[in-house]
Image (cartoon, rainbow, N blue to C red; front, side):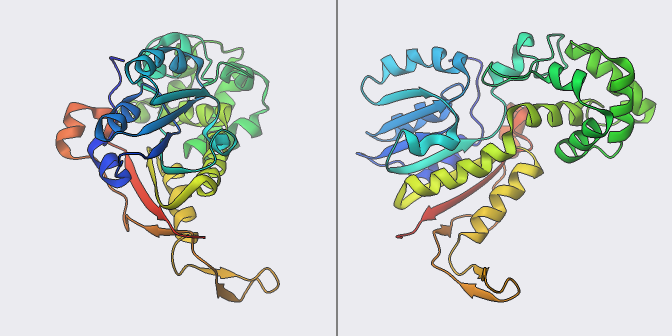
Length: 302
């Protein structure tokens, strides 16, 4: 399992508090870093879920190492309630796996040239399919919404004018040229936001996250912990809003009178009033951790 560095591992374990005899869900198994740490922290069992068949294949070595304690299932974490009835804790790492990011043939990164793919599951339409078929307005809306790119219209216009685009290096070049010299001098690569937007779109990541939070709520037992590590503001806002709405004392509008507010039974107690962030030492060791934010909550009795 080399090559994968789990982000904010100590903080995740502190929030999850694995206990002997417990059952936990690692909804984004990836390189297996969280699962391994949970299994080493307590005499417990872990169900690991990942939609990437490569992750499941790599994880078989860990399954053998922790014989009878680790089970891997290929699928989406939003469907965890289909494979487990109850659990003591759920952890979700919403970042792209290091394995996916570092393999050019997966098409997630512009650092090395590869096919414009970006599918976590290796199934369904690719990023190239979308880039080469969507109209300019749809491309601009996607890049603006999911990439928070202020010049999304210029990016979309350049993409349409340059089609077909089938390689990551081609797309990076087109976006960079569209954004110009000023963007090239910025701290991040000009194509970063566009690549993020396409990845989110191809994998339906934000909808998957919303469904996943709801599924976690259904399977968590009282006192069970939900720990989520996000990597950009779109994800973090969804997690923050969901946990705030479901936490103790959160008021709700009545469906009969939307302008009125009433209090309903809370589902969670917040464990993090503000998101946790990685230490300076961790960011120095692993620069990809710099944007990570951790939020956690404890399930209350129904």
